[in-house]
Length: 409
Image (cartoon, rainbow, N blue to C red):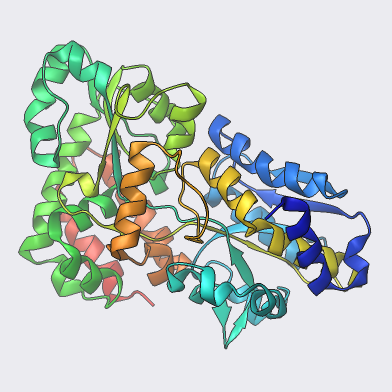
């Protein structure tokens, strides 16, 4: 289907008002090179339809951007659209009646039949009504490795976390930092979550994140994870960067051997001209447990009271899930599309690994879908405190982690 045909169909469900060119401000936190390249695919498609995309990028990641976006909305100066992650981050805004109901778009476009897994649309649904459009599947469950770094160290590229730890000394002796980690708290807590699923296993991870079972946190499965996380802290010594994409750049430049980071890192590899399987390798589930958590990004549309803007918001929502835009955006972002009926025959081997796991149903919900923003913030703060405090032991952080989970909502 041609893009123009899809846009006409999307416009039809939004009423005659959306047919006129409309300027929409869209806020997001995609500011790295790969992210900016990806979001431009949305902007290009919107502008090609005769509209104007006003880019409202906010640097600093979601922790910085979300409060600014919320302040704009509750202050009476909302953007037309804004990016949050799938899950509970916009719960209070929806409950306050500040987010546009786009159930009519969802029903007309058949989102319930095409969005896979269904948990993504469920995360946009409150009391049976749809309030956001999921645009991708991002998973934290990846480790990225520099083939050049391992060649310089004279060892094979690891295929599991166990092998990775065994090669760390050789990598360090070659003058290469074994693990790249940025200084933002979400990076440390996110990496811990990857290690927890890979090393403690699916049942234990779900017991902690879904059932809020603090006893499992103190059990042997999670004890192994906290000890491994303590070892990872030492493996990162020697690299001092703040942003996640700076850590990815260290892997790209072969000054660091590996990074635990979500699949959005692929956007940086692609922008640098790196080829999967040649310049870098990837391990879903650290090569230990082949599972993806199906998180990602969604766009919400604040209530403005302007019928023309509302029609355009719904047109944009439909456009974001059109087959052509899903392919162009997700190919640049390094993420997986939310609809399985698009042509991705040209994807690289790492993306194909993700698609295969998705097709097999080897997935779990993301932490953002299971934990409240308040709980996530507490865990972020705790794990970055541990990462930056060498005197803090794995046993100490384990007890504090358990206490947060015990009180989690």
